[in-house]
Picture 1 (cartoon, rainbow, N blue to C red):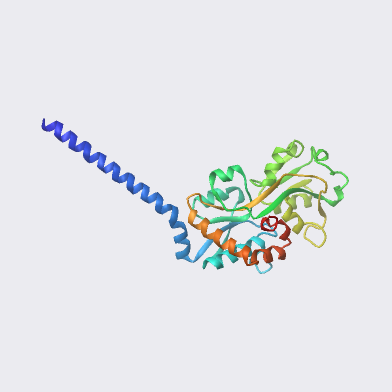
Picture 2: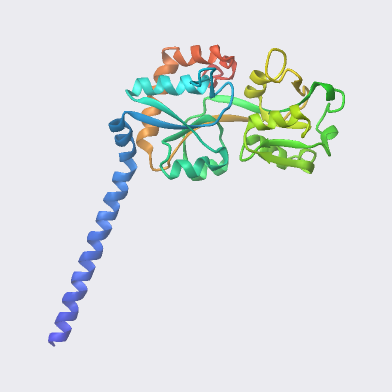
Length: 276
């Protein structure tokens, strides 16, 4: 009889402990969802994951970060009372860096995809973009269409929208090779080790052609590739930071600051806020 009573008591104690642990676990999850913003606010700094991507994020002659996304992020952080700290990352590891807590957000002309929607939280889209093919001017008559690029050596940044386009197109994927950065893709074409670079049009328009470092390259006109939208990436659980950033962006749209920044970098017509 005593054994039965003791067994019932032990069962009750174990159940009580399990319930208590579950409550603590749920509380921990709840705190985790909201403490990211508290940490940012306490540190006074938001760590922003970027790559060299002109005109979005790049360094001037003094080594200081500049560009549309740079000024956009700085304006948002100013509204929120924190400092923007730009952390250069490997683009192909952006989600890993974010979820590991090495950065607080990804803010670097990031294309919205179903894969990203499943793995991280995303802001509202703010820029419309598309991919383009960049070639040497000397090959302008050779590569006039996607069909003409079959068999050409094609490069694009690994993990980028350009890489996705290249791997999905029957002509571009034939001899496709991923590279580390979009600037690497341009350098490959310039040096002759590749024939075609698939990159974002906003970067292509700022980086190739007359009076640029890639004056011997050009965008292939008449070749239509898929359009896309840019958004900022956050950890899925970090809804507080995402909400704070949204409030600041709404204020920057309302007071015209975002429009002014976009105009400075030739992106005014690509702002989704201007297309509604």
